[in-house]
Every structure is written in C-alpha cells, then in structure tokens.
Image (cartoon, rainbow, N blue to C red):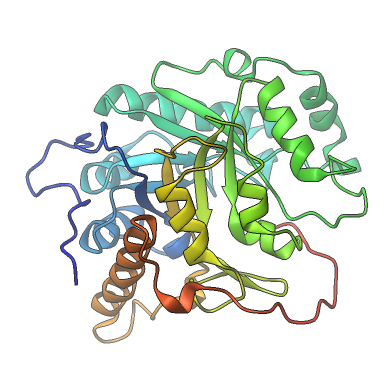
Length: 320
C-alpha cells in the first residue's frame, strides 16, 4: 500500500498548495460521495484516505462562505467547486446559482493562493429551462459575464444524452459540447460514467478533446444505466482511460488537471456502523491508490471494463 503522499501534511497552512506545480493529474474526492455527512467530517475522511483535495458539490445554499466550508477547507483544500445542478430556485435562479459557485470559488482561490475550478452543468434544453437555455445559447465569454476572479477557471460537464436530439445539443452531442466550450471561453469537465450511460466510447471521445480543453474528470463506473459505481463494479474501461490520460494525455497534450472520485454514498460502508468511518477510509484509500496507479500506467486489472448489459430505457439526468 502506498503512502498517502497527496494528502496535506499535518500542520500545513489551510489550503496549502503543495501540489500547485504537480506535473501529473491531482486526485481529489467529491463531497457527493458522503453528502449525508457534515462537510468537515467529509473533509477529514478525504484527508485520511490521502486525497489531494475536495470537489465541493453545492447541493444546498447552506454550502456557502462560512465556518463549515472554512473548517473543511482547512482539513482538505477545495480544488473544485461543482455548481448547483438542480433546485436552482433556492439560489434565485440558474444564473444566480452559477454566480454563487463562482463567488465561493473566488474566495477559496484568494485564500489559498491556488487555482479553484468550477464545473457547470449546461441547461438541459427542456421547456422548464427555456429562459436559461436561451440566455446560454447567446452568451459569449462566460468567465467575464459571471465575474470570475483571478485563480478561478470554468468548465462545462457532459451530461447523459439520449442520442435522439432531445438534449440541448443534437447531431453529435459531444462534438457540440466541445464547440460550446471553445465558443464561450470554457474548459471541459469529462464525466466518464455519463459517457458510459450515453452509449459512448470513453477512449474514442477522449481522443476528440482539443489540446488544453480538458480541465477536470468525474471518475466512476457505470453498468447499463446505473451510475456512480466504484471502478471495477461496472462495464467501463476506466483503467485504460486513466492510463492514457496520465501517460500520453489527450489530443497530443498531457493532462495536469484534477480527477475526482464521484460515487453514490450507497456504494460505501455505513459510516454509522461500528468501525464504519475506518472502513470508509480504507475503501476510499484503496480506490485512490488504484487511481494513482492507473494514472502512472499500471491500472488495477479489474478496471479493464466488460461488455455492457442490455439497455432498457433512455438515460436520465444524472446526480452530478
């Protein structure tokens, strides 16, 4: 078992950016893995498991600048902020939700001297999102429109696509998403399980990403339409994907962004059980070590992927 070298050293300054010049991808943990726990407890578990930081999911307006976020950030620095992706009315609308995420990231970036990335979900293109979709389709230079502070970068995430023209994009959802990122001054967050449930080939799509566009990866497995499984529990070739990303990059460019483990909490041991937190730390630590090994070109054999099961329904909007 390798030592958790990516964890902040005990006694290090809050949000210390020891990995700022890291030449390889940084492995972080999504707070969505344990969203039912208090944020500082999630950060303590992520630190104990050796993660280099947090991917902070803004599932509620309560996740805002304040004591809880500061306590978590001191334990395991926030490297990525995942902007709200449902219940936008709680923030006063979709655009205000995005601005809240950008503002939170700006405060954290200014505090620790490190860059903080913000992942945005594009509008779904449905009637419910008609106003936001219209605004988004016409907007250019989103970093300027959202008031992005120094040290903050933005990207759009790929969502599950039905492949029938029902999404915001149409002929080739992935190609059109890439074009939107380029046109609006954004990077790309690549969610591999969303690609999987959309029936797409992870390795083929990775090769279609232009140099320098990929900023962040959401990492989990999928089987059929079941998402956010631990790697090796689904059908996706996650080991070869990380090996290619870490060793040869994509589009001829090496990847130096963040890779976030993003699991459904039901896939982890019950924290409330006896020895539960220790069990969670052991499981997460093992998964992190597998991610680090895969990025170094030595993925766990069981992460090679297998044949997808039969599809029985259209993909639905994902949880992150």
